[in-house]
Image 1 (cartoon, helix red, strand yellow):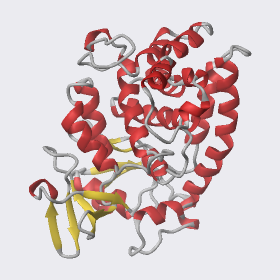
Image 2: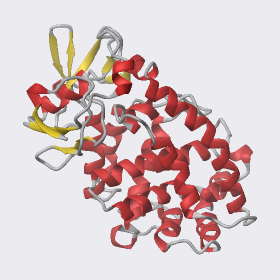
Image 3: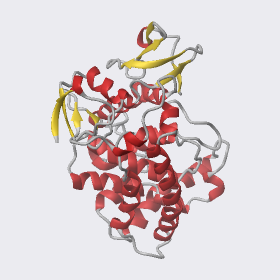
Image 4: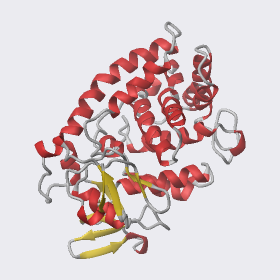
Length: 360
């Protein structure tokens, strides 16, 4: 291990520790294979030096980066890490589906180490070059509304806990809360879950029961209370507008508050039978305009600030058809970064008629 000046970093080096900004935001996790994009991000946040491993990544040496004119999304999809992640993901979903169904129907006992293993198996990699959000953003073809969603939320909760600098045990607990939060959905009829149109009032009443069903299923398994509470309370909101009890801030379990944010983010940015995925920046805009009263301020701001950081230097398409790269995050308007289109810099926070339509 050695400490190098950021100016001396080269693609292929591997970070030996988490890298945080001066405002305590995690921007590059330990084990990341540095790329031009990652090094530029370090420079952008004025990181002076970084601890790196002594050897260059073998994965990088065998698979150097693609040309700069290829979009970041295409680089991800063509990377060996993404292909391995997708392979594991496709393998783990059916296993998790069988396990979740069995536990929900109380035909087998719940082994928390086993279900935690489902998530951690997806995070195993010889490189940390890509973030979980890079991976999941490029796997939005799935329209499964329970099992894939639960795994997505678990992965994101794992990262979210690290952004909050939680302990290893707290991170494990947050991951499990995310993985099991929707276990009650197993009891909801499939025709309602997969209905392409708007739910009737009666159907919505049935769906809302999944929180209580999930709580009862987990209670029968004798799991930690906070995991049960996350299943019960992940639709509660700090202003009292949620369900099933209309609880307010202090009454809502801490981990349920985390799951609530990630649950909504993943649902909005994922494909559904009745719509395509929503642009992450649009979701951030909704959170900024409508969610600051509904979610715990500490959690929602940490989540949003770190989410937009994951899209730094990504190529985006504006609603007027222009294409450019995200080069600066506006802290006062996270959904409206500065975009470089050719030689022009466009501050979206100063352009009310422009917005990001898609990440490409």
